[in-house]
Every structure is written in structure tokens, then in C-alpha cells.
Amino acid sequence: MRTNPSISERTHSMPKLSKKAIFIKEYKAIVASRVSKAYIRFCLDDEDSFEDEIDECMLRELAVLKASRYIFRGSYRQWETTWERAL
Image (cartoon, rainbow, N blue to C red; front, side, top):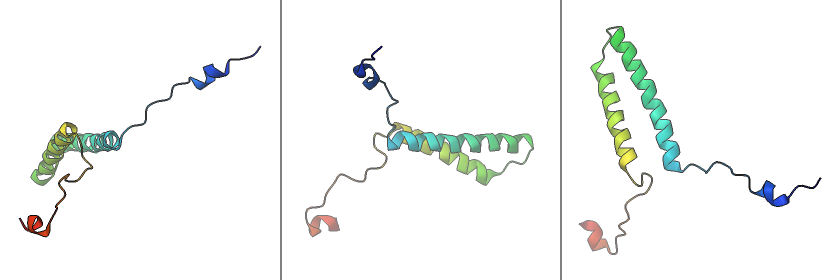
């Protein structure tokens, strides 16, 4: 029995994740790990305000990253003259 070659060509693969999606996914994993460690610190009554501030900062940064359209692009503004650059 012959198989139709066009059927094998139609196999669907998962779409490639963008750099942003990969970065956010990895950042979420780090934040999740820090949250679980914060919970352990809380349960052991070993609260560390410095670590708590880092955790809060990372959570805020994650929210900013998710809301940002572009996270790896620099400024789009190109300076035309040295005079404008001095401003």
C-alpha cells in the first residue's frame, strides 16, 4: 500500500517560542523558586527583610516584563547630530 507523501509533509510541530517568551518562562521559574523559599522562611520564622525586598522587586519586574511589548530592544531614537546628542 502506498502512502501519500503530502500527508507526511503536513505534520505539525510546535511553534518556536520567542526570546521574550523563553526569558519570561525562565524568570517565572526563578520567581516561583524564590516564592517557595520565602514560604519556608516564613514557616521557620526566619524572615529576612532583605530577601523579601528582592522577592518583591522580582515580582514587580516580572509584571513589567509581561506588560512590555519589547524587552530586548534598545531605544529606537537615532541621534542625527552631535548637538542633539548633547541634549
